[in-house]
Length: 207
Image (cartoon, rainbow, N blue to C red; front, side, top):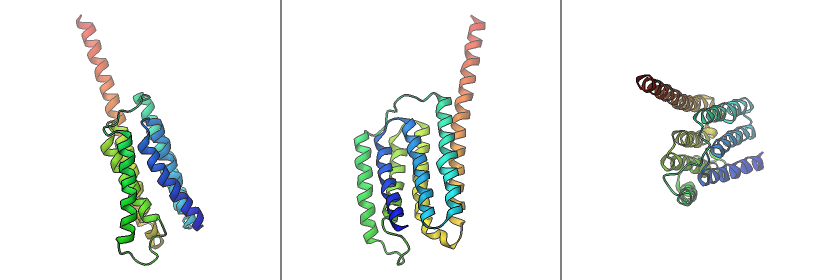
């Protein structure tokens, strides 16, 4: 189980850097779904099978599916123009990784509270999510950044789940916020579309 957990942590760290290096919303959504699968796998290695199934359903399927559907409605199939250069974002993510490893050696935590590399991986995921929020210009990409940051917070709380599911319920509340954000973006786009159609019809009738 320990080797499986370490493998999931390594893949999650690699996934974070890949998210910072892409300029396509399609790949951002795919990497987000992969993050949900990895988090579910980590919970499974910690013998939380029921929570792992819930995380797989919510973070690995429902939220990425909602993001994908909204992307198709918005017809966002082109490359994004990030506010920060891709190389700058990747370097910032690697800097966050180095800082997280330094903090793991400096912070005083309870003995055996965090398995090896869980704390730096969680902090790096949180940093990468904030970089996506700041460095991307489209609303959907920024929502994905918020979701990535929330995944980092969720990973920080995994060792606390042995005492109950309160942390999972709080994380689920943040996922609900993500769903509300995405639905708000879709509804706002639909409203703007109908408004533009009505304005076009009014002008055609006036002419």
